[in-house]
Length: 269
Image (cartoon, rainbow, N blue to C red; front, top):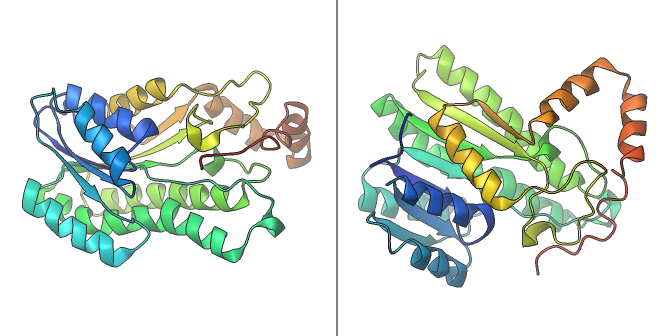
């Protein structure tokens, strides 16, 4: 997808953070934008930020963890936009507790929003892309979908699922001849938004600026990248992890502050 000009882009979690910034970047590229969020006030703020662009912008309040609500809002989106060319599954939450301190309800909510919500939207809009023989599905995962992090068992589980889903879906579509439907999995390190407030960055690994991440996602869509891993040295870290014994890699993460990163976490309230 060389350009987003004239394309219809749907973004979940568009009320704040990189969701809002991706919406702004997409509109700057002359894309029409469908905005999804559970927070109607935040959603309105994003919509207002896009008003000066000469594109179609519509917002929809939806709890993406509820499949019935996703089905209902998807029908309205199709009515309003006819087709969706780019689906960006971005909405997510983080709790930030040790495994045994998490309630089952908290774990289920994390999985329902971070993983199942993305599945629900993909099931609604992928068939249309297959019928047209083109499109793009972008799943915002995390570096926490590539390696486990202390106090993030539910979050990492949801993001590992997202990475596995993205990789499998890409291969299935390619195997069935849908090579013009691109799947992009985005795996950023911690982003400097309210979602991870209080997170203590690991040594030599500062948090990412949301503007940078949003810009790289849009670039990744246009370049049809299967993965957008940020910062780029995380790719080398993954190779390092595979080459050395697990015990050694765990020690390295400990030295760099991996087990202490979430101790001061407060998150978004």
